[in-house]
Amino acid sequence: MSAPTHTRPRPATTGRVDIRLPWWALALPTLAFITLLLMILNPVDAHAATGDPAITHLFESVRQAVLHNTP
Image (cartoon, rainbow, N blue to C red):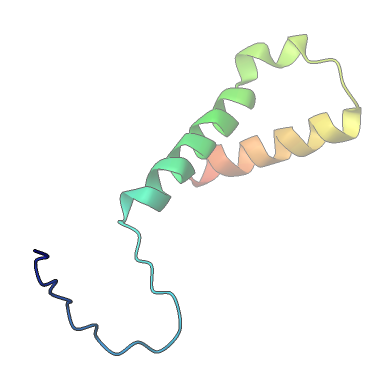
């Protein structure tokens, strides 16, 4: 003997996917990226960097802008 199955009524959809992320799903990767970027731009290890002077100058400018804007 088979049991009757009950189906749930589905709400009307608009045909698009609606995904909502929690706030920390974007905040944590952003915080990790900024932390790693600041670790790369640490002036203590700047003397060991041997690269293209243009790239070094760019990183130094970004580091100064970040440090200048922090309270």
